[in-house]
Length: 110
Image (cartoon, helix red, strand yellow):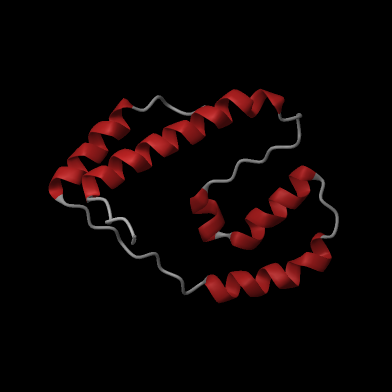
């Protein structure tokens, strides 16, 4: 008995898009159950560009106490992560084409 073989890129694309669709469907279905004022949506680009401002906004919008105490630790972590660069993903042509097809079929998220 050993490890399973790594799925090819086409299969990875299919599985990843299916998992994302399932996750977003569950979130959309459950969203109405989140009490008003208990959900803050954050754009990833905002978090990357201005992590301290973005996290402070989350604290403020959710009414979380202790921002002044948490700020230094969050600033230290943001400073540490500043040099992080995600590795680019290079898909084979067929996998990239399939990904684009599947993305085009996804309903918009509200």
